[in-house]
Length: 196
Ligand SMILES: [Zn+2]
Image (tube, rainbow, N blue to C red; front, top):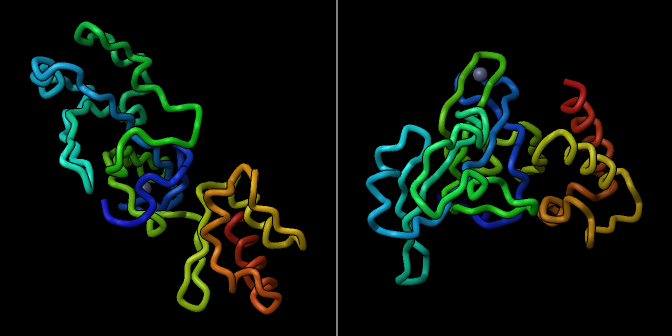
């Protein structure tokens, strides 16, 4: 739960490196819903689909009780058929924005290559599939679509970050990746990642 990415805008699904076979795998964030009544806690502790979690809030005395759902491990919201009064399965839907409901980086890792399906705490950008190091700094992209956008951004001469769909990613591009000296090499390596 360290790192500065905790509440930064990220898509709900990312391309990551599988923790067992190192192949390209998918990661999907889990969604947390605030538990309304303390008397609901035993239900969530016993639930096979939902995980009870206690969330401390950094820098504040406040903390909250939440129920985490790993959609990637349960085949979607349809798995949530029985819930206490006052909750609906749709409460655990991903936001339409690049917003996260929990600061743990909790999610599911799904690997088609080796069949791994497991809970995983994201370490970003260490887990990123699309990443390359240059002079001690790492350039990364969330997934294929944003890696294509990153390539186009680096290749382009006018680099507008404001209002860009992936501005939250482009803001993290270390400056030296954009220098004329680094650009050709960086573009070649990005291209290779996209082909692979
Ligand atoms: Zn794997």
